[in-house]
Amino acid sequence: MLKTVVVLPTYNEKENLPLMVEALFALNLDNLYILVVDDNSPDGTGKIADELAAKNPKLNVLHRQEKNGLGQAYIAGFKKALAMDADYIIQMDCDFSHQPKYIPDLLKAIEQNDLVLGSRFAKGGSVDENWSFYRKLLTWFANRVYTPTILGIPVRDATGGYRIWRRNTLIGLDLNRIRSNGYVFQVEMAYVTSRLGFRVAEIPIYFPDRELGESKMDIRIQLEAAMRVWEVRKRHHNLTPQMRQTQIPGETSA
Ligand SMILES: Nc1nc2c(ncn2[C@@H]2O[C@H](COP(=O)(O)OP(=O)(O)O)[C@@H](O)[C@H]2O)c(=O)[nH]1
Ligand SMILES: [Mg+2]
Image (tube, rainbow, N blue to C red; front, side, top):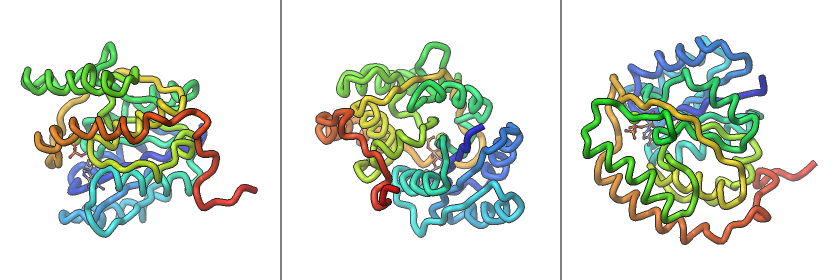
């Protein structure tokens, strides 16, 4: 198996992190590494991550001094994963809404693609059965109607955060181009990838609610995200496949 790094952003995930690390390594995949990106969680998640790393050489921790959003945490994590020579990079939440059992499906699908999304709204996917009708409708509308209509991309879960990237996709899209945070970060990444002509596929997932800890997202963040989709379009609609980056900025070619 090619080298795969799971980038796991954490903010106050002290209950979930040890369980997640255990679940990921229990998949028993050779060459699977974990990179925790912790933004100085007040609950001590960073220290727990260090303790786990001391026991496991396949676990790395990136500490950042302050919480400035999931997008920035992911960009820092992706850069570090590329520097670790990852061939494939997986991004997932640390709260079990993204279930580790789908990782073999993601790894299989990436063999023929440049980005694969774990999708709640692809055929066979679904969200927690306890979500209210209203919440289901809102999320479905955002992902199946609103975002694909504005951006013109055939992605059915553009705000989802469970994904696998091929190394050359993350290099090619140029992480320094990406400006957004939160849910729009996921949208911007998917849009840039599509505009650059990379192959994007989806696999269905079931998305249960977290059982431990608390969500950092709320309705205000979701509404703001909806407005920012327009900015994403404006910023990137001129991209073409010729504009792919071929090396990590700052690195000289051999
Ligand atoms: N490093 C870092 N992780 C974050 C930040 N915000 C959220 N997370 C993590 O990102 C994942 C998703 O966050 P969550 O609050 O569950 O969002 P939701 O699933 O949309 O409700 C979890 O693993 C969080 O701990 C942040 O600002 N920095
Ligand atoms: Mg969550």
